[in-house]
Amino acid sequence: DRVVLSLKNALRTQRLQSENETLRQTIQSEQQMLGNSDLMEQVRTTISKVAPTEVAVLITGDNGTGKELVARQLHVQSKRCEQPFLAVNCAAIPADLAESELFGHEKGAFTGAQNARAGAFELADGGTLFLDEIGDMPLEMQAKLLRALQEGVVQRLGSQTTTDVDVRVLAATNQDLEAMVQEKTFREDLYY
Image 1 (tube, rainbow, N blue to C red):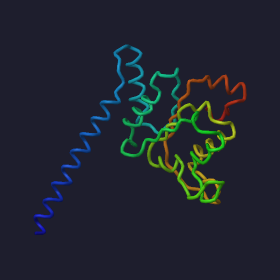
Image 2: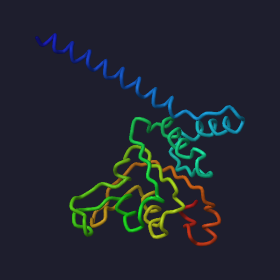
Image 3: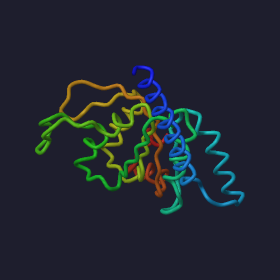
Image 4: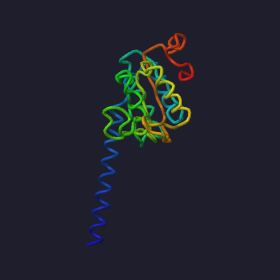
């Protein structure tokens, strides 16, 4: 009975691994960037060079040009590809909820906080966090984001302790961040 059970478990495990690999290849093929122009080849080459590194990346371009697709390719081709990829649209988060969304909160930290909740940084730990439309992030949140990037720690709203996080951050915007730095609407130290 034990031998039969072990063989069934081994076959089940092998089947699940095969299905997992098939699904991974399907997802990757669906996320392929289309086009054969010289510019697209330059984008693919740049992705293949940058993906294996651990550097933070800023992706710029007009709306609808595939910034999130580039971010996903950077993740898929990175050493973190087996870990989470979490996309956060900074423009869609109300300013008063941005800190909670990114860093989490403890029970009772604010009205309506019925339970403790992990933020995007904790949820993406070990993987990649994609901050879409980072140019729309409120200025006060930019300082907290900078600290998380520099120190690799986050502090939930209402908590006295910090949590170490290992997250590669990719960001995207359709805005001119250099002009925003000059206008003092985007932090220069975060930009660099």
